[in-house]
Length: 300
View (tube, rainbow, N blue to C red):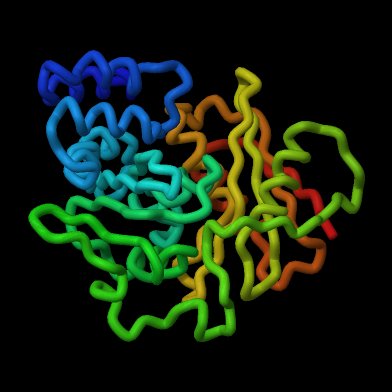
C-alpha cells in the first residue's frame, strides 16, 4: 500500500466535517509532513478541540511514516514549531546495520521541523512517555528549558525536566546555545563546484549543529526524478544521541513520501580534518538502503 493510500484510509477515521480538509493536506503532491499553523487552527475550530488534542490525534497519520523492519514497532510523533506549524515524524530502522543507526520518531519530528526552518519547538506530542535516548535528544533543543512542553495522552503538558531530572545538558560543556538555533559556519569548498547537489550539501554543513566537535557536515541526496533532499549533522552533549547528516537527509526524503529506491547520487560535505568524520557512518547508512556510492567533498 502506498503512503497516499494509507493516508486515505486514515482520513476515514476522522470526523466527516474535517475529512475534506485532511484530504487537501495529506494528499497534496508536495506534502512533506507539515501542517501550517493556519490549517491547524482551522482544524481545532471545526473539531472544537485544543491544539494539544489535535496534535495527539495526528499521531496516527504520523505513524504511517514509520519504517521499522527490525522491530515492526511503528511510532508517530508530532512537533509544533515556534511558528505554530505542525511537523509529523515516524521512526526508521535500517536492516543489516547496528541498532544505533535507528531514527526515533521524536528525532524525525524534530528534524522535520528544523529542516523546514524552525528555530525551536513549542511542544511535541508523543503516544507514550519518550525513551531515555529521546529525552536526552529533546533536552538539546534551543527551547528545551524555556518553552518546550511534552504532550502525552491523558496528562497535563510537561517540561522536559520533569522527564529528565538532574539532566546532563549543553551547559555542562559550556554550550549556551542549542539544537535548531540558526547557524552559519561560513564554510567554502576546498575544491570549488557549481553542482547543485554539492552546494546543497555545503549549505547543510553550514547549518549543522556541532558545538562539541566542530565537525560541521551535511548530506544531499538526488533522486532519479531530479529532486534533492538534504540534512545537517546534529550533535548531542551526551554524544550517543547525535544524528548523522545522512540520517537527517533520509528523514527529509521519507517525510516527503519518496522511496529510497529512487536514489541516484549522494554527496557528503564535511570539514577537511574533522575529528568526528561522518564518512563511514554515512556510507553504512546509505549502503543499507541503496547501492549508490557516497561522494565526499571537503569544506574549510
